[in-house]
Amino acid sequence: MTPEPTLRRARLPMGLTAGRLAMMLTIVVAAAVTVEAQRRYRNTSGPIVDRNGVPVWEVNKQMPHDLFTFVRIEYDSYGGRFGAWQTDFPDSDLNFSFRLQQLTSLKVAPEPIQMRLTDPRLFDYPFIYMLETGNLAFNPPEVEVLRKYLLNGGFLMVDDFWGGDEYENFHQEIKRVFPDREPVDLDISHPIFHTVFDLKKKPQVPSIEHGKRGEHYEWRPGPDDGSQVHYRAIFDDKGRIMVMICHNTDLGDGWEREGEDENYFHEYSEKQAYPMGINIVFYAMTH
Image (cartoon, rainbow, N blue to C red; front, side):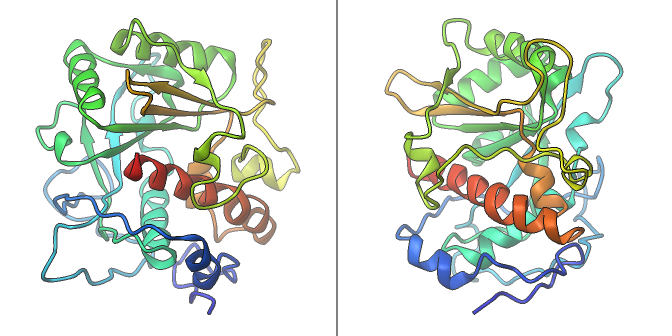
C-alpha cells in the first residue's frame, strides 16, 4: 500500500511504498537511546512545538527507549555564519525520522534531537548528523570528545557542503580530530550504496532552488566546482566507517523539501535523498 501523505510538506503521492521497502529490508535494527525533545530553535527545555503536520507515532510502551533517534549536532562557524547548523531544521529531521518509521522496520523516536558535542548525553546515541560544514569551527574540547565518541563506536554523517574551499575547511577541522587518518573516496561498489537500496550511481541532490532550475549541482568557483559528487569515509583500525562525508550533495534538502515540488520530489527525494539516507543509517547501525 502507498503511505498516506500526512506531512504538511509531503502532499505528493509517495512512490517509496512500504511494500517495496519491505521486500528489500531483511534486518531489524534497534539502538538503545533516550527519547529527548527540543524546541524549533536553540531551546533545550521542551519539545519541537511546530511539527509542520508530521504525526507523533506511538512507541512500544514496554520498550520505550529501544529506538533510533536522529541527532543533529550544533556547532560554531567561522566568518559570521552563526547558526549554519540549523539549515533545513526542523523539517528535514522530522521528515526523515517519519519516513524511517513509516517505511522501514527500524523503530524510530518521533522527536529528533539537537545537541553540542560536549553534551553528556552524546554517548547515548550511536548516530549523529552535521551539515553546512564549510565554515565549521571545532573548539578543543569538541575535538577531544568527537575523537573519543567515534573511536568508541559512534558514527558521524556529514552532509550539504559544496566545492573545494568548503571541503578544505572541513578537512582541516576533521584532521584535528584524526591527524593520522585521511578520508577515502568510496567506489559505487562499496556496500553502503547497496545495504537497503541497490543504488547504481552515487546520489547527487541539489537544493530545491537549483533543482527547479534544472541544475543538478550547486556551482562553486575553483577546480572543485561542485559538479562531481563525493562520498568519502574515515575508517577505524578495524575497517569500520566512523565518518561518512557526503560532499557536493544536499541529502537534507531532499528530506526537508519533499512536498514542495513534484518534479523535485520524484527526481531527488524519492530516487536519491531517502534511499541514500536510509542506506547510511542502516549501514551505520549494522556495522
